[in-house]
Length: 89
Image (cartoon, rainbow, N blue to C red):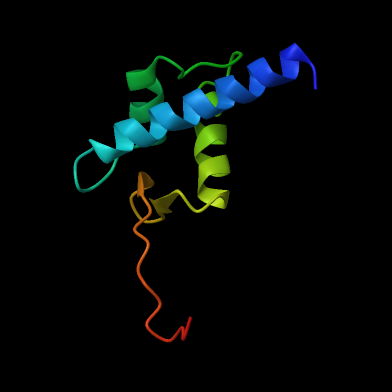
């Protein structure tokens, strides 16, 4: 692996950690993409596409099972994992 690859992966990990940290301290009703992006200074993009950086990070983290979005409010929270009581393992 190249140094550039490692730098990119480290940057992604740092950005996701920052998003998780901000959401852990968020109000109970969560935060919008715009609030998260602006708080972290990453709510940017080319003209007409502001917010794509933070929204992409949120989508990645949602796919990883770390965060979820309330579809009615569009606000994001840390996903709460509950124990599966039907699992015998």
